[in-house]
Amino acid sequence: MFRVGSIAFVFVALLLFANCKKESDNSCPFLAPGVVYVGMTQSQTDTFVIRRFEKSSGFAKLVDTMLITKAHINQVGVGKDSFMLLPDNYPNFNALFYSNNWQIYFPKMHRTVQIFGAVPRFTQNNQNSSQCQSYVSEVTVDNTVFHFNSWFDSQYRIYVTK
Image 1 (tube, rainbow, N blue to C red):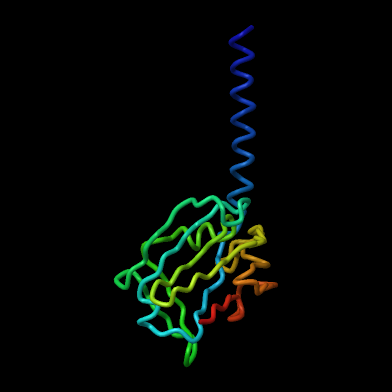
Image 2 (image 1 turned 45 degrees about the horizontal axis):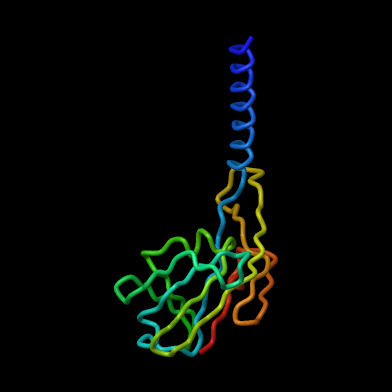
């Protein structure tokens, strides 16, 4: 009797796991908003520190810290006085954007940017398409709240000023 019960338990557990896996396979991948830095120079932003905090702790429980140096920064121009900084050695910022609070510290300016309160919107893949993305519907950057209705236009960006 013990063996039959154990086998039945394992079978049910496998079925539940398989069903959960199917649901997560239908979720669209997450896409963090672009972070645009306005009024800063390349020399001011050639080194920065990303600090990741537990979301529920505000900025009290530090999870990790990453120093981003010039060798690992891809700078993409957005306008005459603005650009995005894309570090190639810290994928957590984009992948875990919605599940943490963040600080970005620029030592040359003694400037700390706080990003918090991200509200993710998870979408389901209803058809086979490369256009399916989960995204943030709301996030606060230095006490400015940004709201988004979609991810697929040029307005899916947050702005950080000097």
